[in-house]
Length: 236
Image 1 (cartoon, rainbow, N blue to C red):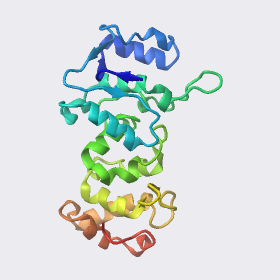
Image 2 (cartoon, helix red, strand yellow):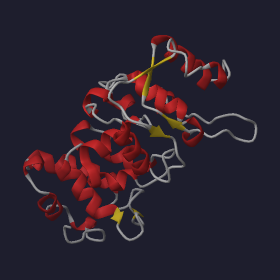
Image 3 (cartoon, rainbow, N blue to C red):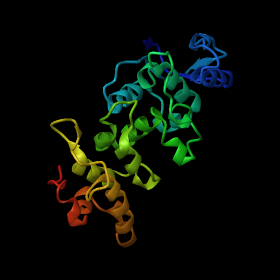
Image 4 (tube, one colour):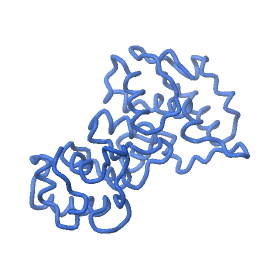
């Protein structure tokens, strides 16, 4: 489905969106042509909902559609992220054979206050856009999966706001992203030594002694303990 621009739900639209998503009203009751439901965002470009294979491809499409608008400004626009979740619902929350959508935790689709980090980072559209617009290719390891399945790595490596830094995520990408396969390397998840879960813990330990943000990704990699050797490569 192609739209001429990006839109935001009005207050009335947000109520209708929520009611439709939880099955209180049919999807068709949310009339996207009704200006009391959705308003066009000036300065944005056309947007096409596609069969995105990865969260990165979805984020690229959305960032391109933002056109002349400032991405950080739009991150706080809950009406936009709700509209995007609704128009992308068949990609993110497809119906099962009984016509029911598996929505999961509410903040996967209903945008929370962006300042509430633990809830805000769960949104299946806003979080990939934030990661891509902030980190670019250094978010590849976080965005290489299906948009509907954020995955364990993203959960582990975005749980704290100070993880949103080129140094840390550049090191994580070096460890866990398989360039040839365009996916995660075997063993990146789980609890074994060198896993992303362990990297999140080791980061906290290193942060006590070192100013990690003053380092390059290569310098951070050099300070990781031997358990990460099975993933460690020359810095790209």
